[in-house]
Image (cartoon, rainbow, N blue to C red):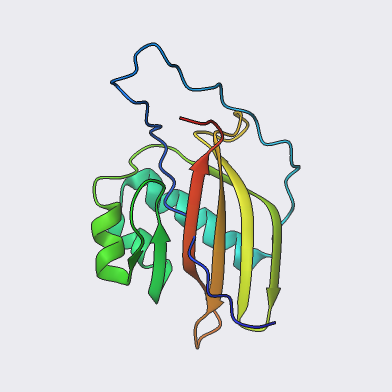
Length: 155
């Protein structure tokens, strides 16, 4: 498998509505129709650690889940790369419960990916989806190379 060079998840749980258009309401969120899949423990750890850091609003812990040259590709914003920029992007984010679930994954050699859906709490309807590209570090730990997400409803 060739190394993935994609950007990818910030989990913007606050959805944007144009205040200038009070008559237009966003379409209701559509639940993710895909069933969850079980992840191998090393990949599942990435999601559980992300949930924990996000719930605490801990930007440094979130950035530590990324490769040194990792990307965050936030909806409606420019990509950021590297731990310092990731910390800056995540500062002030999170601080609320988050539930991540995988719907597909693959890992071969030192690269992999997880596709998934997210909700504010486990067993609640999904409000968005994400994709993570992953890369193993020298110790064999999976780190996020790129993180991208978006909500399940249009603005």
